[in-house]
Image (cartoon, rainbow, N blue to C red):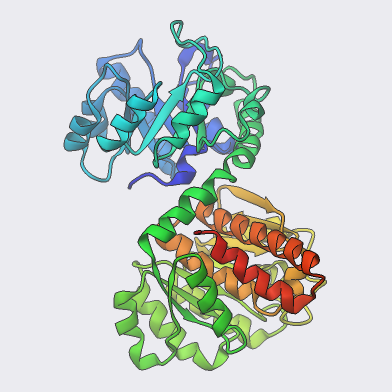
Length: 465
């Protein structure tokens, strides 16, 4: 399975101290309904058959929600029941040994309270680190609070995700803003609540807001390091911009359109982007999509589907056949696909902001199994379970042709290095940040939309400088 960055955002660690007549599995399910992204079974008082039974019950719940289950310390139990991985402390089995037992796809987490421990764990093959206690905690009596500045240094000393642990609640979680962590591991802050689901929802909202600023940094670095090849079948208006945007962030574009060469390009590309503005290339899109099925991520941009029944029908055919990783459009286009009705007045309808964009994105994600991005004043990113909100950007983006097409192409690069909703959200956040920088630079030059267009490309290229 492997660890995705979004798995780390809200990490629920179990404790039977607060069951209140429920089973642990029931409480875990409530946490998952509230937005928990990963679960650790940590029950020091259980062992043998009792622990295994609890583990199997919770594993079944986690599988229902598509969330990884890790076992604390017990590597052999994780292997026996088929859990996604383990979390080990400094005095437990070494990460390298755990990896040799569980295999290359297992998730291995390691506790690290110092920079030296963090770097050693990364070198030994850990997928993420748990570091703290960032606040006082009642679950470990000997855990002393970690200096916030030093905690940040730990986060910055490694390239793998670092999860903050220790005494985190809805009341203090925002005190960790800017500390560069990738997520939060929470025990009593979730399970001691009277309403576990409601409390988890509060924590999820805060956690995603705090972690999204760090997400783009790690994922942009991966794009630069891996230089993914992204095949773009896009409309003639934006071919040049899409290619240059990918080059600007470190990707490698190919703009092949002929149906006869789709299989060859599928063999060498890391992602495919199909833009419905290129209606003359529908045959090539289908050929390229089928060549990519169950392999490289596919992004579909439903340009014009809000006002064209023809495009919408062809787009829905493509979605059904290809099963894309991501669908990105404006709010009207996403609603049109979700309802199969016209919802807009043109390709770039400035009145296309619908009040139910978030609901449309979630509906379409559940219908198609794709990550759905509804772009607008607020970008909504849905995977059928969780919903990310990314704010920022500028209205000037709608005054320049092709910014949406550029975003779809950039999504291809981000999803090539990590195929997740968080990766899509990170890409949206990057685009919005660059647009804001471009607007500030345009104002400084007393320029117009032409200047903004150039400054946007400059801002994207500045990402990797």
